[in-house]
Length: 633
Image 1 (cartoon, helix red, strand yellow):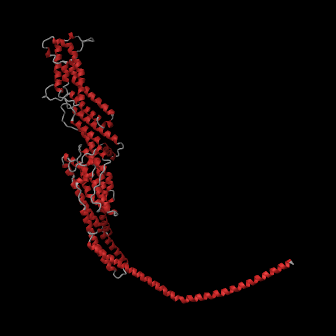
Image 2 (spheres, helix red, strand yellow; image 1 turned 180 degrees about the vertical axis):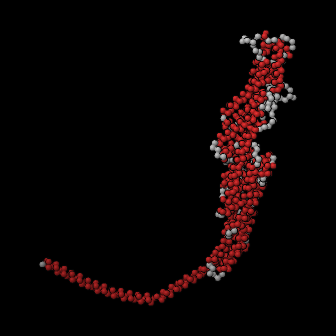
Image 3 (tube, helix red, strand yellow; image 1 turned 90 degrees about the vertical axis):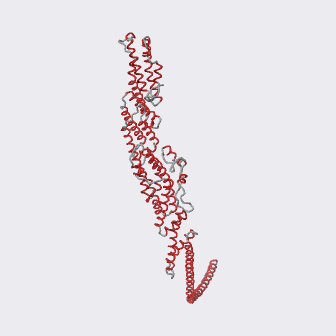
């Protein structure tokens, strides 16, 4: 029974479910019918609204076109208005308001571009023609304005203004000439310039430079580069050349240089050195600075302008240097050649920087070539000097045996050379010398050797062998003393000094031997055997003859050698002492032994004319360079 009830309940539920599914299907069928009817009505509505949509689209397009046309008309009217305002500014000219004038030019360019791109407008060609004509007039006035401003503010620099830009140690003294400050730039002086400050002068007021820059830019945009180039070059080149003339720079040819007296030429070389430093560090640097500012952004024109502005001035300066380098060589020119070489080396970094662009290559190369030419001429002058020293054939003999003028000249020359040590090192390196110090030592040694060879030849002019030795002693001593007191000692070395000190002593010993050997023989008595000398073996007459001979020879030596000179007081006293140490003991001994023999006879003073004290006093008169007219002391 339980199963039957369950089956009955399940059957009842299945029936209810079937009834529900039938109702759901009926509802679905009804909904599909309704939706199909709605789709048909929407399609009909869309068909009815299509004409209205088309009309709305055309109305919207029409409004958009009207807006575009109004805006285009507004732009055109604005262009006409701007052109009218620009024309008014152009007609007034650039003097009143240059900034507005430049804006007007830009506006005209904009108008021409606008109508060139919109030629469909009826009046486009007329507007373009009118604006182009206005622009041409505006640019013409602009060129005039550029030229006028540049000329008004381009004035030659007065020398005093330039001197104020120099370091204080290079400014001319109140006693100097207008171009002062030139002259020697030896090593000590050169070192003081290493950190010196050169103030580049203001050649055009800074407030004017932006205006000139803007004007230049407008001319470049208009394609007027050549007009700009010519105006800038002609104006600034003329002013630069005037500044150099005021400073004292002049164009001199090789013939002009050859005709000048040495003193005049030396002064001009000193001034040229100063002019080169002022030109490169101040004037050319100032030109480069304003050229870079005015023509900023136009590199090719900028470099060309700077090159053309400076080319004539550079040529004038370098031509003088070339004339000196090519002129006839002479020993006194070596030091000015070294001065000139030194300034060119000093300025080389600035020259390479200022004239490093392609348009300036020729000027830079000319400067570098002059530097090498000066080095070459200086080296050749070195060789000439060595040869001239060895072959010096001056017949001017120093009668008193003192230091020869050639010796003092050569030694002073060598001392000056050592003032140029740093310059000489650079010069030797120009010719690929790997050890400049060794080369300088070799040059000095060769010069000293040439001098000594010449002095040996000159010493043979003396007929008195004693004076020959005194002459050589004096000159070699002067050389040694000078070397010991100079920087040459470091290069020649202690061995060189010691060797030549021994040579001095050898000449002194030779002098004593040649000059005093004969007179000392009068005071020497040879024994007949191996025993002591016996006074009884020497006759009174023989002793008298010896005293007379001694007196005569000593008086002759005194009279002659008082006129000779040993200029160094220490050497003079040393030589007198060396003679006294030999002569006085020998005289005292002879006088002691044989004096009584004479004193016991008649007129002893006739034979014994000098006491040892007299001889010592008279020896102290030797080598004083006394003349015949001077009284004896």
